[in-house]
Structures are given as structure tokens and as C-alpha cells.
Image 1 (cartoon, rainbow, N blue to C red):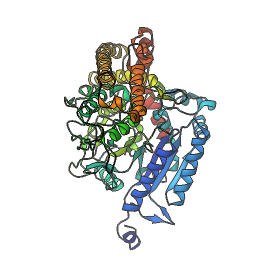
Image 2: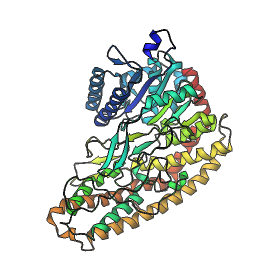
Image 3: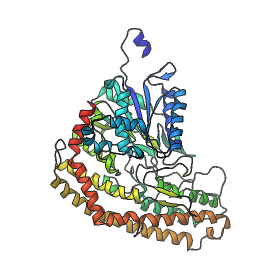
Image 4: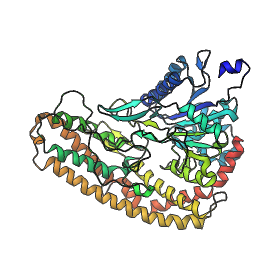
Length: 542
């Protein structure tokens, strides 16, 4: 392209890309993400190099860390990858605060639901939506030509590659020319926002995966009971097909039916990742050592794999915005992720319903997923996840996901209220309180019943698994070398009860009518002010 332009032929019309990566206390994840971007540039050379830099790719690290050491490491990574040719900018907390304060007070007040109101002394852990929206403003500052720039939103725990199943297990493949295909979509259509999906670890909270995870772990121990400790490991069969976009796309979700997916009836077998010769006892130790990662979002048995589905720039209408994998042109930046101040989960799907109702097929999806990895380095070190607390000082790992669980329930309430609202009301006009309230009351009753049913099922499955592992007299109880592994299984079961049991903190909040009323008030107010907030945002950026 450059040679043709210098020869007086057609100018290079390809877009510039600015990638925004919000990150909070995740140096290991950020390194993997940056490395995948660098490798993508090396493999495909989109836009070429000029003066030792990839000229059409810029990367913005949007800081949201609480720990100063994490900030230091993130800055060091920015410098490291600058030396490798990436144009990397670190958008620090002080700079973010100054940028927010540069907005006139009255306008800032109108944007509170979008940009938040965090005080300077606690300008961290603002949440992905607020941090991402702030990064839009910095991205615009970095744009030399806004009309020819695409804004690519990426999560720090995602990489520009995909996973596939092989005879040797999971394999990460750097095979997709993301920038090329995305550029082509925007140059050949009127698309404003393009979203991809994820392969690898599920994009959902452990709060909605516990029932099926217990099913699969119970199936593992049932099969293990029919073996002997010294026998060669028999847990290397390939997992069932669960490719992105298939009918089992959401097999990891306990309530997949809410989203129009089938809930698979069969269990998914555990696939041992140990290499070389080893026995069933070694497999048990390996599985037990990975159980705690479930509470940080890693599902050992129900990952999603990449599948070919036609041309990579083939578009289908979208309804869910994946916050860690979407691209907007300048016009598309008006469709901001709303309600960030609520800190609820499901903000991406909620935004997607609103966007789809407003622009239809100009909000599209393509088969360009990212590889999603909840944990880095094979353990929980550095596995920071907002709303999940890990107490390593205790004799056993005590994990508390009550904050995330509460945000999941009310995020679902926000999502399904919005989904119905955009069908019954005009998304271009302010939503009326009475309409919101009537819909929300119906959805609240449905979700309470569904969550109660799942809570009861989790209790039954937990008791059954405990009996199978510790009371049925199977061979692993007589193996002293498995004492630590069994202790980890016990710790896992204790954490399931702590987080999903009758008296779990999250469930107490969800059952509290007073707490629900306050959350409903917040969501109702946010929906009523959605249109005015959008108008204030558009005045700010256009």
C-alpha cells in the first residue's frame, strides 16, 4: 500500500486502530495481552512500520489498579513494548482524574452515570464501564484523524489468538488477521459497532456456573471410583464440542435458557492436562489443585473452542456487546456503556440491547473471538477479580464472592428489564418510570424463583459430591499421599457452601426486600436518565 501511494497510485485507505485496555492489578494478564498484540503485528504487519514503530496501531493502558506495585509493573510493561515497536501509552490515575475534572461541573454532573464520581483519593477500581468510558476521551485525544480511526476495546485477560482442541489438549493459535478483517468491515459497510466473542474460559461469573460445575466434578469422581490409584490415567478423552456460535455456546451457564440457548443435559468430562505417563492418583491431585480457580471464573470442563463459520468479515446482527472485544468507529462512540456507576454485572449485554434497538444491523457481530483466560500462570497468584476476595492467611483458602454474586443478580434484573423495555417503549425517548417499574416487578419475581431453584439444586449437588468423595469408602481415602488433594476438595466444598448456601451473605442481600428496593430504585433512576445521559455524552465528544 505504501509503495503504491508513493508511486502516485491510490492512497492507503486503511483505518488506524487505537486499542484501549482497562486493567486493575493484573500485570501477568496485561503482559499476555500486550504480547499477543505484538505478535499479531509481527505476523500480519497491518499498516507496516515507520521509524521502527507499527504505524497504524496504538495501545492505551487504562489504569484502574489499587496496588502501587501493580501500577509500577504496568508502566514497565508499557515501556517494554514501546521498545518492541508498539505505540503504547499508559493512562494513569492522576491523568484520568485531571481529564475528568477538565469537564465543566454542570456537564460532569450530567455524565455521572457514565463517568462516575470517584474522589481523587480513591480513583481506582472504578469498574470496567467507567474506566472504559474515561478511556474513550483519551483515545479521542490520541486520534489524528477521527474519521479514519477505529477504537478497539480489549480486556486485559484476553489475547489476540484462539484456542482449539487437539489430541494433545488445548492449543492457542495466532491465526486470525483481526485488524485486516475489521478494517474491511468498516470500509465496506455502514457498521458503527462490531463485537466479537470469546473462546477459552467463560465470559460469565461463577455465580451462574456452580450447578453444572458440580455436575461435572461429581461425574469425575464417579468415574474415578471405578479405577485404581496406580492405573494409567483415563481422563484424556476430548471434551464435547462447544464451539463459539454453536447450540452449546453457553453450556457453562446454569440459566442458559434465559438467553435463548439450550441447556445441555449431559455432563462434560474432565480433561486431564498432565503430560507423559501418570496414574489416576496424579490426575486427582492435578484436578484438586485447580478447583479454587472456579471462584475466579475458570471452568475446568466447559471451555469454548474456536470454530470456522464462513468468512471472517461475515456479519450477523448483534444483541450483546462483549466489553472485552468490540470495535467502534467515531460515530459508534456515541453508544457508550451506560450505568457504570451502579457497578453491576451484565453491563455489556444491557448496552447491547439498547444499541441494537437503536441502530439495528449497524451493530454487528463477527467470528473474530479473543482467547479468554481468567487466571495466569496456572495458579491464583495475581488472579485479581473485582468482587472476589481470597483470604490466604487462613489454614484453608477462604473465598468470598458475595459482592460479585449480588452484582450478578441485580445485573440480570437490569438486563432483562431493559430487554423487555426496549420492545415496549421507544428507545429514542426517555423511559417512563411506570413502564420500567411494571416490567421490573415481573422480572424480579421470575429471577427470584429461578435463583432460589438453582440455590436449592446447588445445595443438593454439594451434599451428593461430599458423600461420594468422603463417605462412600473409595480408594483415595486410603492413600496418605492424597491427603493434601482431599483437603483442597474439602476447601472447595466449604467455599461452595459459604457462597451459595442458605445463609450466604449474597443470598441474604438478595432475599432482603429492603435491599432489593434500593437496588431497584437505582436501576429505575438509571434507566429514566439513560437518554439525557446519552445526549450529554454526545455533546461532549462531538
